[in-house]
Length: 362
Ligand SMILES: Nc1ncnc2c1ncn2[C@@H]1O[C@H](COP(=O)(O)OP(=O)(O)OP(=O)(O)O)[C@@H](O)[C@H]1O
Ligand SMILES: [Mg+2]
Image 1: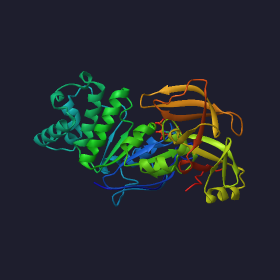
Image 2: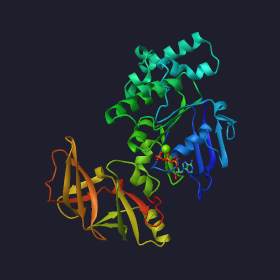
Image 3: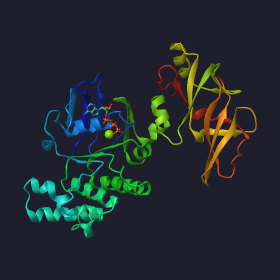
Image 4: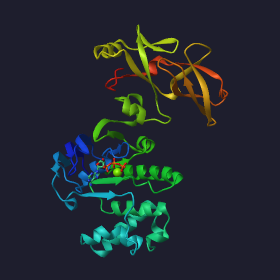
């Protein structure tokens, strides 16, 4: 087992005008489950492939434990990768697929059989060992791909969207299984997904990338409670955080008819940047329903989920109309077309610079 360090690691593809991954700095602890997440094209796979040795590193370094692996070939890095398409050999049985890397490494038959059987037990695949991959379900194939990685007992697991071929329900159960398995094995894991829910539920820590640049790396809790900038604020959380540009008022910000208090530091930071507005972020669950005043929202759509509900409405605040999402109790769902008055909870609002996007509050 080992830690993993990206030390200003940069990948510029030939012919590209800017790096696909730009000076990535990331330290992953021994045994940690780190999730790399971000929109399509942000550089997740490139980062993983640099760590795997499948992509050249054009600047900076990559270390596994205290070994500098920046220019080592993949086979000398002691890692195992699980890909999106599993890449199982169709003509081989499940057992042979799982043991293939060990066979190539020259291990003896009895040892291979033992390791494959142990992994199969862990993955609930014992009864399928003699089948060919085509006679398995998607979820079972996914577990064979995991098994192939596990039998090698590598220092680091790399997984690139390993669940994206599974249907929604299987994805949810499989992500729990993978997280539990990783915890049992204690092998340092870097997991790539574009799905922020997957990232938040699986990772010990989550690293958010955008346009090749690391935006924030934090525990899921901190990422949700204190997003470092507007991008992370909008990306993490579902339904997304409401982000509203509002004028700065005396001691706070003007939110509809009310002034919501905002810390003095946040306001002076905005003023120092020459801004007259800030962008306020409020999660859907952080509005209080008021009898009158506050911000009036015309209810467009109501999503009833039983325990609670989401109200999708529009306001006519500051600069024109603005769409907002508000969570309400399951038994207090307003009617479509009615008007709802809401006030954001002062201690739960996030303040960002409208010009730079940086977090200003707390
Ligand atoms: N072999 C390549 N040659 C040139 N450019 C590439 C190559 N592979 C990827 N890129 C570019 O590098 C950027 C990052 O790609 P990457 O595959 O790392 O994104 P990703 O975050 O994994 O996206 P996705 O979620 O769609 O898989 C993209 O702009 C992509 O077009
Ligand atoms: Mg990718």
